[in-house]
Length: 206
Image (cartoon, rainbow, N blue to C red; front, side, top):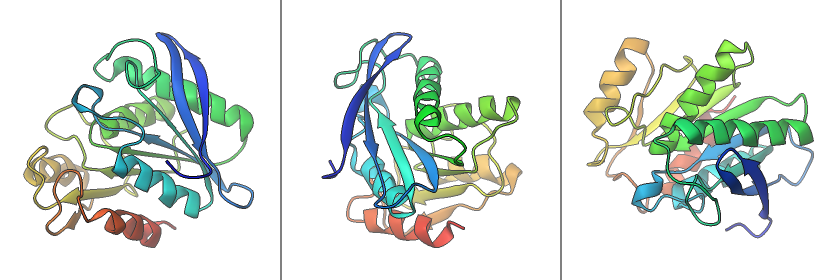
């Protein structure tokens, strides 16, 4: 956890949802939502990649929020294969928009969280209010139905990822002409490679 993290709870469709908020030093320039990896395989909002994304967005000036998906930590309910989790992420977005109105939105996720965030983006696009940009790390292509994303999406993947093979990510990205940034020697959890995620997102964010 970051020293400045504030924990709070929201009422979701399946019960209370445990959330966390991190704020930049100065007034936020945007809102960022971070989605964690698969709940049934140990994924939580305190996952190292999720925390790295959080710190990155805070450094970019974004008010950054995360939640434990259903059945994780102090969040109630049970895993809903990404469907209910998408609804819960929308609930977190409503909460953030209420407290930080009129700010641009960034969506980011790791592994299973990328599936959830592409669903959130699709819903927002239908409402004609899409996120400013997405950051997808360890994209869940091939394991879940990862939806198409905007051309400016930042996609980062590990060369040695044996959970979600790089070839599956290429197969998903190729028809969309989406670049994939590959971190040499990185596994699915980016052990000893987390700094590359922050450095890449910071360099590519504009």
